[in-house]
Length: 204
Ligand SMILES: NC(=O)c1ccc[n+]([C@@H]2O[C@H](COP(=O)([O-])OP(=O)(O)OC[C@H]3O[C@@H](n4cnc5c(N)ncnc54)[C@H](OP(=O)(O)O)[C@@H]3O)[C@@H](O)[C@H]2O)c1
Image (tube, rainbow, N blue to C red):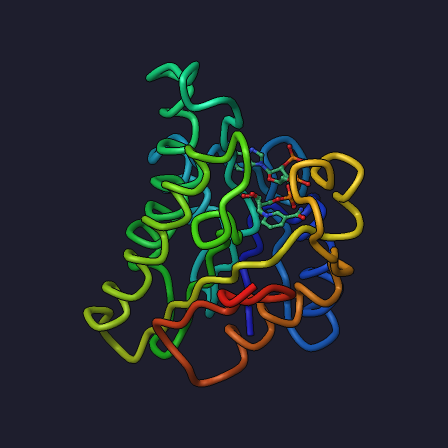
């Protein structure tokens, strides 16, 4: 399969690339790195990216920015960061990708656990992750041509524990390579409209 991996240089993206490269043609995309560059907050930039990549079988997104901060100090502009990047950026990767994806192809997006398992300073990210779940479950029943879509919700990776660990007391981090298996399951398996929780459970 030809897979467009957006966020390929990141912590999750590198692990996903290593997992999928063995079996597929992976096109590495970043904001400032990779074979192609895109700004997912800019719909025209996404359309230019897909014009350059040509047709493909799958899009995997391991990107999306969020502002973390105390709820009573969050400004509208800070909420906008997550809405424009992690939420609408990933939604637009799907809407624009419809023109270029081959029949039977798939989209795989990224969220995280904090909408179900809240942390301090995480309101904006929780809101966006919840919206992504609603989007994926809903759009799965409307996608044409046998197209599929899933969401991967990994816990904190060992590689990111230094930065995020203090916000997740009691959480056991996972290697990014383990999170990458959720992306392989989405791209290579038959399922659609699913949320793959990797390394955490809703009952914790
Ligand atoms: N790391 C974790 O433990 C973890 C766990 C759960 C969920 N997540 C979620 O997974 C996503 C990725 O996290 P990460 O830690 O892997 O991130 P990361 O290491 O900071 O990497 C971010 C990637 O996204 C690209 N990027 C940044 N801004 C972009 C933009 N505007 N348009 C297109 N690409 C852009 C970067 O490209 P350049 O390098 O070229 O700038 C880079 O490839 C985030 O939404 C995060 O919340 C992460």
